[in-house]
Length: 459
Image (cartoon, rainbow, N blue to C red):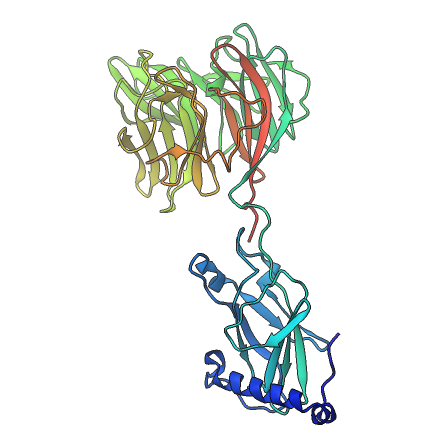
């Protein structure tokens, strides 16, 4: 592929000698090779480093790390660990920055059918593979050539890929609440008359529906949670705690609540080894908990009577400060009024603290029946019923719930046939979001979707 150069060849073709002399002068004056670290070994034709110059629209080009592999047969210049440059990075007009272990007499690019002398300011097209750089040592006899490789992701890293796994888990569809436990999805179902359960390992194929025993017939299945310590299913209602290891058979025990008489208004979520719930005693309303390790119940603090008790959106995550945090947003209070508050429960070194995040700092706070997940360093909220009766779409927050904004539908498109809804279920597993069921103003759904951000898993 390459011409073999020698002293004899240069003597026969004097213009090649002039070319080498020109190359030498250019390289001698090159800003990139004027470092005092460059040696003057007349036989060394190896490359020391390779990089790409930043561009105004793509400053990240300069951050790309390339490794230089000085093989015996031919060298290879390629991105570190084979990683790719960001999606959309232009590789047709890049300016390489090359340094050499010893000052060469010349270096020549071979790009497609063209070749030209390296000056340090050349614009080359790295998409015309193969691209080679041939380096001639100072003695103009020893030489080495390198294959240059660079890649840009061909898929938009901010694009979400959506798969429809199942269009109807049960027929007819009914209220469905799905939880994840030990590698399986558990779908609790209620039609107002019976409680049932079906399971799946992949969200596509589901087991035969079975009857649940031991739970109250009017149990709010959407308030069933999974204990983070024992992985048992838990549900708190009235003055009782209900537990199950398989979701089918439940046992009831008195809840050792420190305040009497009391009644549980709603189970909220499982967080940091505790099942959190709202309870009332007289005129007071409490944010309370049941510790699954000590098997003791306690009260964190009183909360306003307007604190939501149903159709709340909750999510547990680790904040940027490293603190385990749970967020509670929207829902209905005891009087059936839609809540316009957002609350944050944080675990600190001296216990737990509840913060009222207010209503003015985030978008569309008055909402019920939404679902929240923590995914790809942000919170994503799906669906929900707005105060005006409309059904919400998808919202994202990169500020841990302080601000939400509508998701970019160009990157998170709506699946074909999907209709807005509320009271969905959502699970994050295997770097994917799984969405289950929900309802709108006229019907229930039991479909299943899997959503994955393209860049998840990329280096």
